[in-house]
Image (tube, rainbow, N blue to C red; front, side, top):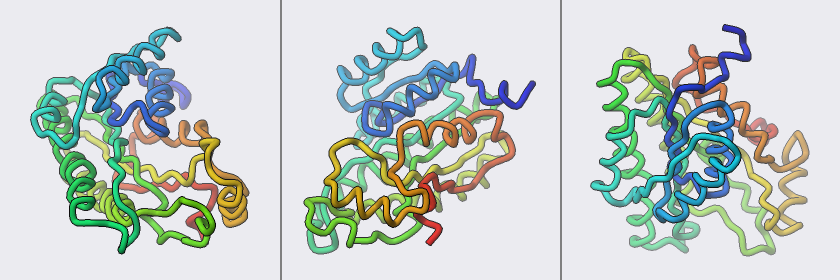
Length: 255
């Protein structure tokens, strides 16, 4: 096997939670282009099916699956998928900063981002262990799980960094290390990818200017910036990497 062959996911099945969103869509495509059959999940079954159909239209292997991370019964269905790769990408967004978040906001985000993440990982990992063929679990974290927010970036805009996000994304890193230690003996690797801000064409010019000035590489992330690191962490190319949180942020967290 060459180094390039090691990045192939041919013959493998990959589940992507939140597979129709800003990060989920390019993640699902990257995995499919690497040869995996991608199970695209979304709370909205029609969106999941449409995203999978778009991949199949390009000759890639994909199917859609309804998944509500606030519903334990819905999550239990993941255990019926013989997955080799799980990408925990879905995130429920609700609430603002410390004074703009209610108890109801906190409970709603925790139900999906904490309990839902745990149950989804438990269901898929249990099946991986039963099959005995190893696997890879990748949590999609954030630079704001590594460093505190620079609120000056958002001045004069409607944007902010909500409180739940820091809690959930930092927790992902701890969970990643814990699971890497527990699941390693079963040949299951667990890592966390921490992207920086992704250009989506909607951010205010003032935010983009400030963010780029603060980032050593001088720009926001593009979809393709995540692809290489993603494949490294879920393929045989990263066979000896587990328990890490890898920033893909243009140097944002290097300050």
